[in-house]
Length: 191
Image (cartoon, rainbow, N blue to C red; front, side, top):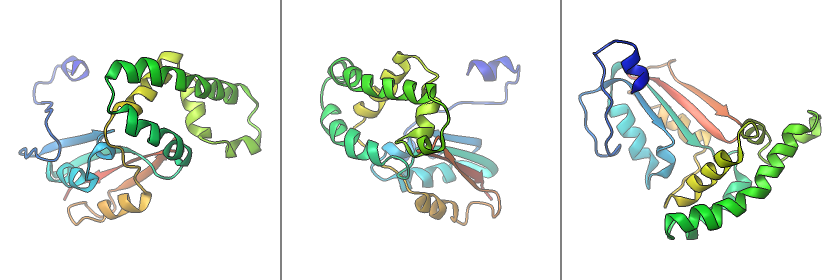
C-alpha cells in the first residue's frame, strides 16, 4: 500500500478477503500470488480471480508448478503433511531450520560452481541459483512457508491452459511463463 500511496493517486483500493467467496464489483487488476496452490479446489480460486476482474481488467497469478518440483513433492510433501499439524514454532525452529541447512549448502555450492552444461540437470537448478543470492533466514522462511500450510497442490501447465481457455479471458491476451524452473506465472485480460 505504501507504493500506491506514494503515487499521490486516490482512485485505488486494496481488498483482502477469502478469494473463493469474495464477490466484488470488479477490479482493474487482480493479483493472486501464492494462493491458488493452497486451496482445496484451485479451480474455484481461478474462477474467483476471473469473476473479480472487471471487463478490460488484467489478472496475474503465480503458483507452484508440478513440473520441476518432483524432488519437493517426494521429500517435502510428506514432511508438510505432518508439520502442518504441529505448533508453528516447532515447525519453524525444530523442523524447517535443520531441514533447510543441506539445501542452503547445496544452493550456495551450485551458485559458486562454473556454469557447466551438465549442472543444468541438477535438481532445482534454476530455483537454486535464484535463491542462492539470499541469506539463510530467507531459506528458512521459504521452508517454513512450505511446511506450515495445510494444503498444497502442484499445478500442471495443462491445467493453467484450461483455465486460460475460459471464455471470459480475452483471446490472445493470456501468457504462461515458467519461473525459476518450478513455478508458473500466468495471466491475461478479462473480456
